[in-house]
Length: 282
Image (cartoon, rainbow, N blue to C red; front, side, top):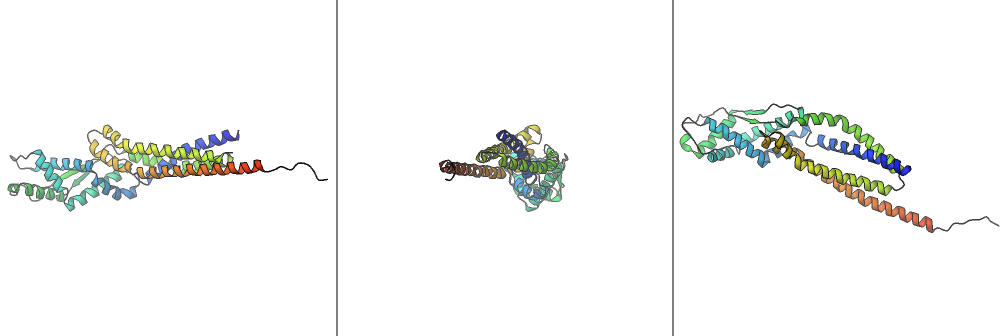
């Protein structure tokens, strides 16, 4: 009876612990509004996202070409890629990516639009550097806008609201249940081994999510899937480090369970080997 109660308490506690751990880590990594700038820096370095931005900017440059002037698509892509190296553009895009993250956490579906003369100026400079004969034909500071889509990411806001309200309660109940199970168990080493298995399993699940989620978002938002998938790669990639730490904690628990179990066996052996004195004096 005692063993069954301990196992039941531990099982329920580990389910709640999974919820609490996931919520705690997510709200402090991918779903933390205070980390938007840090995540934006990582997003800007993402090759898939850069390729998507180059393609979008190339479309705008192509629209700005004077009537009767046509350039190969590959040349326009090279011009757009060079324009993205402009410090003014990089600052503008970084600020836009911060806004993308903030909108996603608020659950907004509207796109972020970069509309500034800095975009047009950088694009013009790169274009003229590639084709000097266009200097007199392209306006000096053409107005140009580039969209940073948030389609496919609005679910992050709903997730954040839901898990913030549930993770703390789940953590408290899980901790209480696990301690009670440990105190009630006869074989406490077994309890540690089960918690260790939970740590391994939870870490494995989140590692899979970090790898699969970007592909899933790309499928759900095919029109803008490249951008959404690139952003998701960064956001859910943030879960890899905590999952690795959790797996390491699982190793520590597994080693601890062995020492605890070994110590219990040795104490039991000493008690069994101790002589018993039966009888009375005289």
